[in-house]
Image 1 (tube, one colour):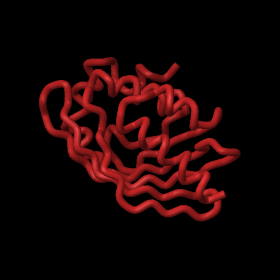
Image 2 (tube, rainbow, N blue to C red):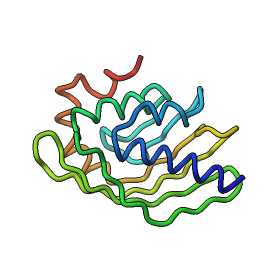
Image 3 (cartoon, rainbow, N blue to C red):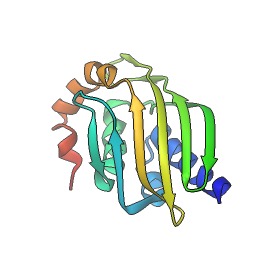
Length: 142
């Protein structure tokens, strides 16, 4: 079970890495939520629609994709922890290189919950102005 869950989590990471919302849609459960830990604008709880829609929005904000370099991956039971480093270039030509730790819960072969740990301050400084121009992160909520 842990290996199958690891595969699901890594598919979601691939979706984020390459701006592939269709793949994210395939591996995300119907009631999934993601919680970006922190206190800045990018912090907060996101619905499944925002998880998948955010990847769609990133196509315009980060055309290169986040280009994750996957580090440690640990799976136990229904939990998968993935450490990664992004190496992206924004649509405005700015580097966006953040470090991440994702804690996924996989239920019935789909992601049901994700805790995201990353430098939300860097995301606010580099990405938020572009997100606001696109209507903000709430613009992707359906």
